[in-house]
Image 1 (cartoon, rainbow, N blue to C red):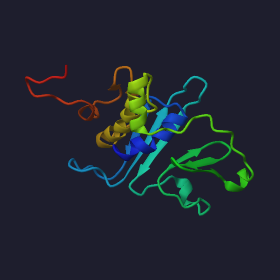
Image 2: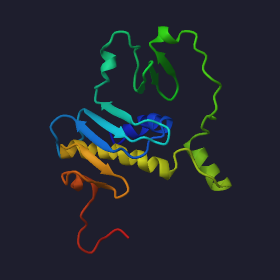
Image 3: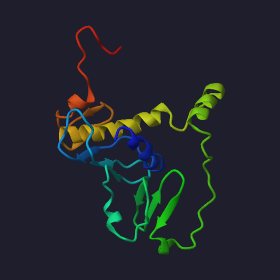
Image 4: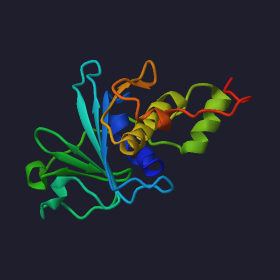
Length: 192
């Protein structure tokens, strides 16, 4: 999860303007302290964001997929993101998307793009250095995305549904996740 989730959860984080989850709950196989789980499903709840409603986001990996894929009507698709709305769904990855059910969106003409294509991670970084400004996945954005992803691991390993206080960077309903959020340093060492 700590690798691929940052890439795949980027789409909903960016599109839905997500930041800090309120709750995180995970399921997976029995915990092995030495290895990552073979599969994992993590449920996040995000608060209202301005005029945007609260959102539930679920991460699936290790061969697990959303229940909508049990329906034979879903297209064959590799890795990606399924946005589920009141009137339909969007199945997307970084290069393509499909509106579902396809029959309901036959003839749909998408609006003209308003966001320019990325010039690439490295080129964005070099441009920000040379000209000032920022990158698409700057530390403010990528830090909160990574925080959410890692909280999924903490929820699985703690075996608890976590209630997250992002201002205090603390789980407020249990201490079982604490060992996965902070390290105790040997005497003589500290973070400055």
